[in-house]
Image (tube, rainbow over all chains, first blue to last red; front, side, top):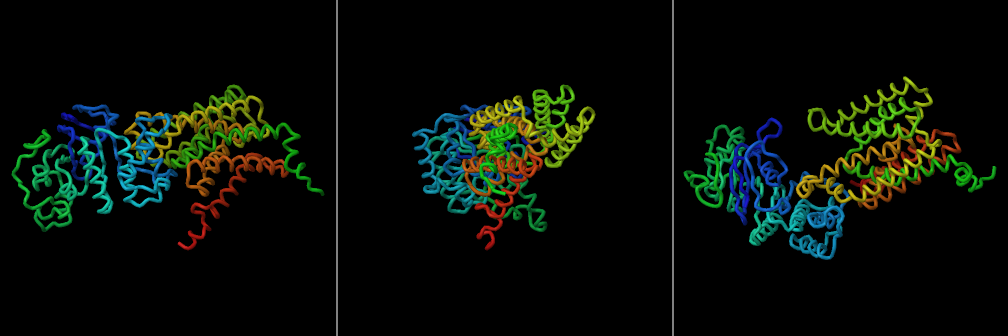
Length: 270
Length: 288
């Protein structure tokens, strides 16, 4: 379980997270949402202990080594001359490190991970020959290789076809059923609607957290700033209508529920 | 005139010890500088390498000022100056709004000018040429021992850093998530760059040293899509070019280090045109 209390993070002088408090239980399947610059990736980096908060603290129930991280794919150098098998093998780092051998056990884990994401037969190809979907499958395979307790995914489904998204979501579900904690930054709110029971809504500060139905209310989403950017385009429409269908969870969501009052997570400062 | 292959290709190296020393110097340099160059280009840090090679000059020049043409003094000066500029360039890139390439360009122009001024206060034009273009044909024992030691250290360090370095290149965000040693890999690698540039500086001079590092790597990129293959091809390119460069410079009395770099330049242009990986005249490329 991850306990975050009054976490405040600055990048030099700009505020990235403002007194965020939230608890994430073991076995959660959690989406982190919020507009651009809301601090979603920052939250993941804090959980990985890569950032020192200005104030507040974060308790990690497990060792930082038990965290697997799936970065945004644009951060990866796709032109680097490395094969799929080699790339995925990097997931064994916690066990192999700088120079320990990549033995039979690891070979087995590699085969299994590739099979799980349906990437059999491309192990020997260079990563720059993969399609977008295949590339994402490869990132998932590396994450599976890590065999971690907590999975952090930063926009795993951006610019990925529907079939791949569905397959990889099945992989995530499988991990969660095996007792792993899954925390994913998701851009597309319809995906959150379909797949994630728990949600954290960020806009530098915590807007709401808990069960999806109580968090993704129109009021909360507008408070997080979702309506704002769209209002620029549709000045004449009402604030509610201006949330595009892709972003509006569903029209019958209750607007009056108190966020965080039920469900897995507590906290928030509203 | 009879063309005797032995007299043409072997005799210069068999008969003259300065040619043997030059060849040995270039060969050990090829062993260590080319893999470093391959990683440098893969990390898209070619310009950084260029800037650091110039940055070594003022340090070596101060060493020269203190104790004349001494391998030890110039090496220490070069390594210290190279490390300072490597750190400065990193800091400037992170903490100012200036683009990294313009700050690197600024650094290396300042360094080059400063180095030349320092040498001109004490040395002659010969000394200046020696520093700028190296003394491939006058490598003494001290220099050869230094080159060989640096090659040994580089290879061992590269072997130790190989995995982290590859991970740091491909997916730095992931590597930081599994290891605290991302900075070790980064700065360890930069130190290797500095060491090899200092070694190259003794053999080829400050202006040409970076060529032996980067050109073979650039050539290799055109022939293979595999890292292992690139390392081998870069090494072979460097070895063959070194031999041919020395050979041409001996028979035609050309300046030595520019001859070696020019042979590499020819290899680069040929690869650019005919390389299997995205060479310009490749059939597929023409059709597309």
